[in-house]
Image (cartoon, helix red, strand yellow):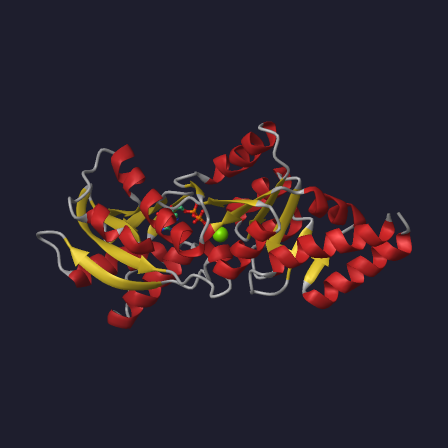
Length: 289
Ligand code: ADP
Ligand code: MG
């Protein structure tokens, strides 16, 4: 392999918005046969909005927003940003939160106006023995994510949150399949939401409800099964999976941890940058041999 040709490949990548950290990443890109895509912030824009607020008996929608908004003000999760925006739109003076705690892959908790507030997914509530409303699962169809709110151990209601699938995602997946690659959608979100989005973009394989600490394990299992895995992600929770993969690709607007763990940084938001990177590696190395 001539260093000049490799450097030309790295330079061509930079023009395409593909920042390759070293020549080894080019070689890894070429041998990859499986692409694992993180859902939130990678396949979707990660810019979420609250589309509904459904209070349980004994609570008002305003109360649900107030308690949830107060707790989520302490969180850095994309879901939290959506909840805080919705809450502030209704209630400019949100109460403060004390004893805030993030529950990675599950939700968040804190004390608001002297009451214990818990915000998060069905798994969190089930783990804590708090019953989930019957109509909750239905809210999670069509790719929406629903978030439960409990006050002093009692369900106060839930919020429905929508994210937007990147317009380029479907074409990017079709492109990857045309290159002979297998695709997998990996997410901490619930199975129904993940399935709906996977169907929308044409990804056949879904791994949902995966806790942040388990994402790297899913990548490792695929590798042990003989796959050569590229992981594409953006979040703090994708860091270990990006490092474990044969090739880690981070979205440039992602977290510092994702950027540091990756071999390649993707500067374009357009997801077709992923098949572009694999094609670039193939072309560059074909010239070399
Ligand atoms: P992803 O893999 O999609 O980036 P995460 O692992 O960050 O997802 O979160 C998985 C799930 O955990 C979310 O879909 C949500 O149900 C729940 N969750 C995590 N953090 C929060 C939070 N701050 N507020 C509400 N729910 C949360
Ligand atoms: Mg993400």
